[in-house]
Length: 221
Image (cartoon, rainbow, N blue to C red; front, top):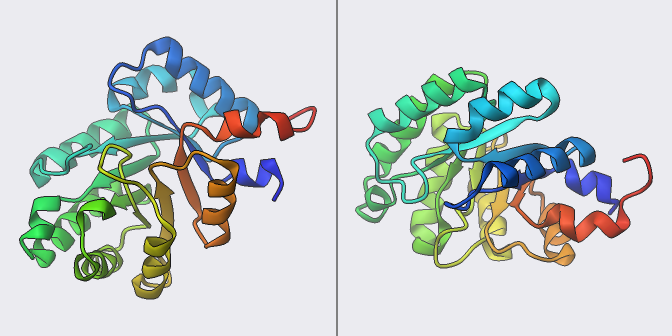
């Protein structure tokens, strides 16, 4: 697979708690140069990025991140501010405690509420697969589908583990036809990138893709 085709599916990510403005500028400059799908950044940097880059970068941010247990009203407030600041895509963490308690309808309703606030903007729902059993993962596939979210996403990158092939295969069996898949967490090699795209992932969340592919990028990119 060509480097440019891979990078079109990459949410170029910088979510470290100590990320500096210099780190963010480097990320955005690479996104502009290599045409990544988006930059995925902390909410506090959205407005500053938008003021500097305008429409040159597609801005994605995180909500309820990374633990997911903030209340729905807090998550929706985060979304409202993020969109006001210039964000285009939201990656929201579900309430993992609610999932573990079997409160699947409650999780679905929260996703539905957040999607309503997002409107036409893309909502990706992080279910943090490393903490869930198969029954819970299947329930989340159904909740994401029923609530009208755009993507189901494996991981925050802050959990005990990240994306694995088996979870992508499970998603494909249980999500609805309009739901897309984002793999994230622990994706650190070119082989990982190609595997997850080959499995049908429309987005890949990683900070490493540009570095991995720089040697293959063609002149004028």
